[in-house]
Image 1 (cartoon, rainbow, N blue to C red):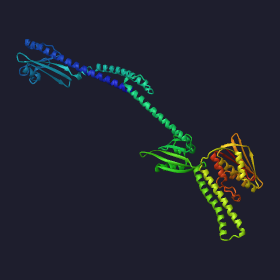
Image 2 (image 1 turned 90 degrees about the horizontal axis):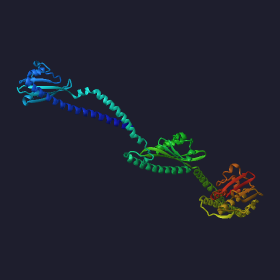
Image 3 (image 1 turned 90 degrees about the vertical axis):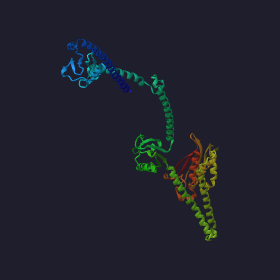
Image 4 (image 1 turned 60 degrees about the vertical axis):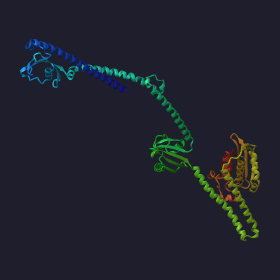
Length: 548
């Protein structure tokens, strides 16, 4: 801006200077031209009087270096000329000023010479004897005058130009200085030219609008950041050239190279070919879904291509941990297969015994054995169906009412219901602990204790024992069921709470177990927020503790 003001001021000064010189030269030239014409008129009048009085003697003796007198006869021939030989001069009858003098008494004209850049003024007057006396004077033209005064004009021009530059420089700095000192962060607090006040007010309004938009944008960014930080799913945003714009912690933990990934190309942070090719496919297909195994987990990647008016603007990658879903689906299929198998086994036994009796292939004395088999298999089938129904109810996770009850008393009730089974197995059940009041779901606590006691009795040895302890410590109430049974090998301890999982399938058939007892314990514990801890040693027994 300073340069523009400087150039503008200098241009204006030079323009004014040139215009002034032209104007002054024009006025002066016109003024002196008029004066010279008046002088020429006066001189001619004097010369006319002198010639009429003294004739040729006056002209011959006249010393007039600044003007020229020519005496012309009636036929146009030159009688005498003060500058040239009259005998060698041509006839002047066709000269404009001479012709006008003969006709009107007075004649004037002017002629230019481009070679010597001069203008000659002529004035002629008719004498009393019929001859004409002409006077002429040479006058410099404007170009010739300019050449003559070129040096002083150049000096004046240079001085004026220097002064203009100095003044323009100072003026431009003084004009711009208040503008450079403007505080645009607080435009309304500036004291400056009135002419820019509307601009400052407009800037203030725009800044207010921008601040409001920044606040809204910041709020939305914070909301987006809060949402993405709390997401269990990984979220990655890529630009059109596949650079990482944003990613949340879940996505960072998934990527191969997660440190300082923002701003990098995606291929620098994730080098698995399956994912990179899926990103390329999404660009052409619009969307791509793949599954990736990583660190023992299964992830589903949903890659979406974002376009604006047909132009690629970016990608969104959603990373979902589907391990539990796939495992649950696998367990569901396994559960369905196990249910089918477990239901078929007693049904086949019942149908086989009934078919033998129906076809008369069973002796009368063997009837009680076959009918007993049908009864025991039917009871086993009923127990299995009840356990399956109970597990289905627990899977629905219906919220049950809580109530206060005594954990110690509930343990004694469960032990009482299993007394006959324990006596048959010759297993001694011992209840220890003290009155422990808890606020929980009593039916589910009952399921937990009963199934733990039932398993401890079934998988015990003859003459063994089961100890149930109900008590509380600084962490809360707990119940421990320990037995002196066969124990669980270490490789099976992680899976005994799965549905239909049996350590020894042949022994389970002897005990009549369904393989669902510990699965019911696990689900019931999850529903009431209890934790289970298992410790077992083969041949010595098992200890299971449930912390409420």
